Length: 457
Image (cartoon, rainbow, N blue to C red; front, side, top):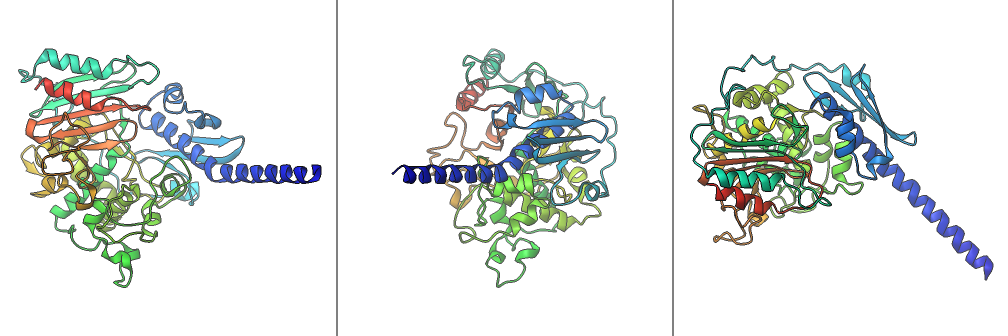
């Protein structure tokens, strides 16, 4: 009997050791990849202090397993866990940060791209068309209610589950009517939008549709799917925009998944996702996927061509609306990570929202096709009223607007949404844009926030 128990104990020990080795093998590179990427971008792109980033962004117990080293000589961050699973993130001027994956660091650093020209001084031009003085003309809002709304958003009554709002801006009818920042952040701080980048990628597609270079109903121009015998050939650009591609992609950040492999292990994120098989018929199932967004970003690159791709995104969209602080970071292959990695100041994120609130027209010039914003805010048939062209919708599940995420907000509200509570909310009926940036690791009452803000208007 003792021998049997001993054998079981040894077997259990070996099984446990095997699982531990497997967990370390697949999970440690994700942990070190996240540490290296976030720390490098925060320090070299956002110009934040390493101590602040380590204390706030990287304070999760699993993330604290990693040791991080910043090299200011070659502008990089290297992260490892007990000398294993080493990941390196490198910063390149004009491009931002990328992880060194599948390609050598030398190959990545030797890449040469046609980058946008330095931005002319706009310090004398008033917002939103420049970085000059903010013209807060007569408020069309209840100033007292507005102040109470901002207090609600920044106050922390539950210290165990803080909201950690870093920036809050409200634009009404093109005017910046409210703005507040947490200690340590300002109007000049570039903040990560996470999945709000998806909405920017959608706008890039819109620019190409306006130029007649893409059509949303046509098969998506993805090299891997070009043969009609490939079932993925039926995936249209609209399917990708609406997250109904049907590709077998797992959006799960708590384990080794399609999403974590793509972001932390792959050099060409769009190609990786494009290689995946179908799990459902295109258009039949709604499933939120960062992979779809990176395929869209790759389509922009293939459509524009390498000679002009890195300038196109800035010159035709970001700089065209004065988002001069914006940095969209590429993967190791040089394609912008259209799902996740754009930094910009809160004021510049507000400009992006105002472009959509103003039906795609900026300073009298149409930048998005006529009807594009309407299509963006129209629910995908399979999404139960919650998703359009890489934007989330408050339309509700039926014509009456029932079961919408934010009952206190109108049904025409749609928003760019990012991890840990980033959003640019657009309410055309109120001529309102609301930008909130922060580090919310716990759920909080966002609907009460919208209720408090709307009370002022």
